[in-house]
Amino acid sequence: MPIRSPRGRAAAYRAIWQWPLRSPVRLAVTVVVLGALVFGLVHLAGQVGGTTGGGGPGATQGDRWDAGGSGVSATPTPTMLPPVPELTPEAQPLDQAPPQALEVARVWTSAWVNHPEGTTSQQWLAGLRPYTTDEFLGVLAGVDPVNIPANRVTGPATPTRVAEKSVEVDVPTDALRLTILVVDTDAGWKVSRYDRA
Image 1 (cartoon, rainbow, N blue to C red):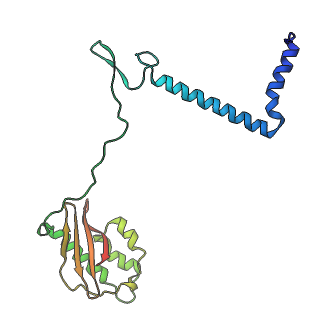
Image 2 (cartoon, rainbow, N blue to C red):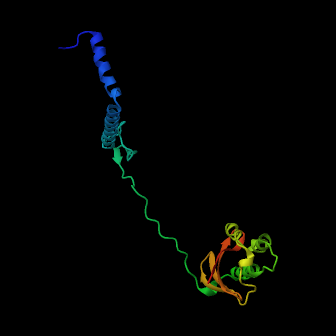
Image 3 (spheres, rainbow, N blue to C red):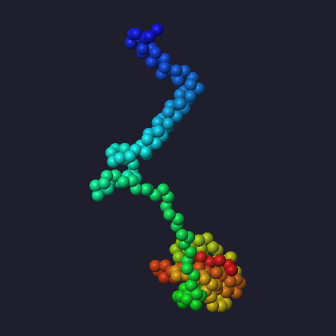
């Protein structure tokens, strides 16, 4: 029997929208169903909008107007960036090592081994500062000079790898051999790393 009075329609509508509120399970089911409906509509609208041709409101981003008057022509849009070649410094012969870089490595090592008894970390760092990059000074700030076993440089700075803007240098000391990376910065050649060889 059809509902003929406005009061009867209002009661029917009220029964429909109150149904989800009668239990938490009904509410959860309603939310999931509505979410699926919204997702489906959005996905469907994206599918339809992506395949529309022509220059009107439904035109895709890949379409462009041809100034020659021939209408709209679709141009492919790149979907991914081209591969980037791995950046490796081009090696140069060892005899091409800049003398300034070798001198900085030698002087830096002399300052590194200079830690007479009673030298504070700040005093030690002050000796290294003119020859060290700012970033590496932050790393060296955690070094206690008491733990440095060497006391003097025992040989010349020898290049082991040479590139256009960096030189790897070995410097011997009385306790160990250091491998030092010297880089060309705006302020000249500076040490940016060292390892115990």
